[in-house]
Image (cartoon, rainbow, N blue to C red; front, top):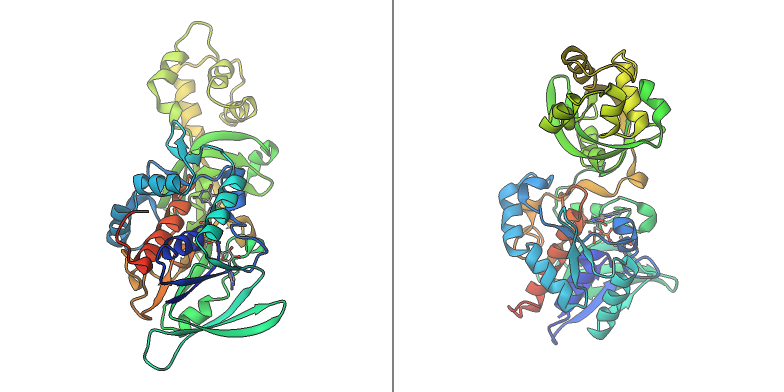
Length: 406
Ligand SMILES: Cc1cc2nc3c(=O)[nH]c(=O)nc-3n(C[C@H](O)[C@H](O)[C@H](O)COP(=O)(O)OP(=O)(O)OC[C@H]3O[C@@H](n4cnc5c(N)ncnc54)[C@H](O)[C@@H]3O)c2cc1C
């Protein structure tokens, strides 16, 4: 069988490698960039955070949790770890469950995968952009793929197509979303594409003076009184609002509720902790020295001054109560970063339109949709590469029909 894999990101590379295990297939991997895995190179700040011990259906923004669970039952952390190890990429986990290659090098990951593609006999067509995918009108599972390279525009027939062209996030790295129209023409629904895992812009008020400061907090987005979502993690004050994993995990909610007046609530869970209140009781303690143990000095000072105290204020019951109440910060939201600043895409093809076991389209048999083309997005921490590698693996393994783990 002749199989086209469109897009050499995490999902397409994995699909091509797995499908190529069958001696009967000719696999052609199309990639618009000069090299495969361009986006992989920048993941995890160059360290490539591939999965997370917390992977579960609930953690993903996906409207069909049962579908997601079926996928994760087939592709958990253990499966990903085993497959990457066999490809020459052993992993290690941090104490909080974020998995990285032992080399901690995204460059090494891409070089190894590229080497594996060549060994597997996958035909790499880099610097080549796919323009169109059409189902043949003859009733067979056949497709015509139109592609453009420096030599011109070509049309070629394939028995199967794996679409792994990503969403629209970081378009400079190659994914621009131009094949969604072709998917629409093939019968698929395309949900609006929204940037996710990006900065949230707010009216900072007196926090504007704290640009560059980082701290841990609980963050929630509200529409009036309704909490749309919350997360905990590190946040960074930027010129226009907040960035960092804490807010990035929620940024898509701003796009999904674009017409509503939204606020960002920032709170500090440590203020409720037993240890904090024990430390408040230490002899000679003042608010300045107490908060200095939990927050960067400038943030600590801002919270104390907002509450109307000086750093030397003793942490009596009343002053603590007032400080805690005043530390529930609320910022009006004015927007989010666009696709050029957001790591993934929410929207695209609903997962229910493909099989959770094989990723074959239920509407266009012979077509497989993997990775960010589907309407799935995970939080920071390796969840998105987990989905990209896993969807590519299952589609490729099904196409190879070898029924044995890699
Ligand atoms: C800065 C950054 C850091 C990130 N860090 C992490 C992390 O540490 N952990 C994590 O889990 N996730 C991370 N992500 C998200 C993760 O990288 C993506 O979710 C994942 O790469 C999606 O894989 P994919 O194969 O679906 O798409 P992509 O990786 O986007 O690959 C699609 C490929 O298709 C090619 N292509 C597109 N259209 C065409 C066309 N018409 N013709 C030919 N080729 C085409 C593109 O050039 C691209 O190479 C990060 C993302 C960014 C931007």
